[in-house]
Image (cartoon, rainbow, N blue to C red; front, side, top):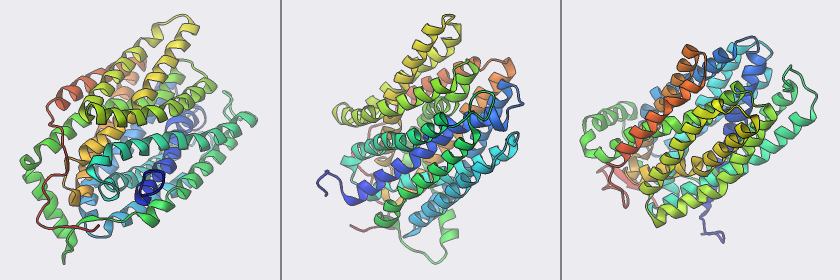
Length: 435
């Protein structure tokens, strides 16, 4: 244990969140939605480009959702988890480095590079999440998971500020004031930041819980995956939680990835959107830590339900936002929405991860987090697709927002039926653990 109250493995695990958060904040949330709409797809109608952006996010999620269970099963064998993590990390970094080569009108190339980079980021995150059982103990998981998200939010602000500084100081290169060359440099800064903070987890974190080696790992892994499907009743709480998670995280992810595009449709300027996103990142830091503490005080399940309730309010406010005629009042409500998003965004994600980690056998963490990612990624498919489809059908993005309410209601009702875990379940016969 270091003088900061964390082990070296815990710190290394937390630092990766600092690195990959730059990709989420700068590329997924801020620059790419605007870059795509204003440069790569500048000739498209607004509703169409917003829909295509939603379809791209759905496509990236679908690819990993199809791969995650099988990859997770193989990664539970000794030494495999870090290899899979590193492979997807390299994929994400490589296509991140290709983003600067996108030119005006290259909307299809833009989507292909973005989808590939996001698949790499998502795949690395699958194994990163699964490493939580290897770096800490069940009683510390809520705290460590919350610190990962919290430091990820505040750490991601640093490259964000640097990139935005470049953009604000550069001459505009498009009709709406977005300087394309400065944006491309920003993509490179993100890749460098992501790589640097990936080094500690690669060097210091190792798989402590794993499945015993076998002669034919591929066939054995597929049999184990099929056995898990067949014996789903033995993991009733895990899969009930996953179904609940599917619904409520669908709404959360949709708001995260579609907010900038929706804001542009409502007429908010790039400067306003960037300021709001920066504000969300800053306040998300203390609130994510607060969720970790309150989960210990009240219970992780109670805090998840509280977070869902906050997002229900966010969705209602976003739907009625276009009805506010006075621009000053509309801006005030937009900032209120930003505050509410920042107050619960990190907490609901962090507590979901640690809550699920205590429901599963630690030696099968990659396999079960494969399912966790399947449900999360399929949720990420349906939400943006639904919002994009309804927005394209009606010609107004706000009606797509309204459909998100149902996701939060169903997710909350199912979550209420999940029994809260105290620690790891009983180990499987082929479990091996190393301290």
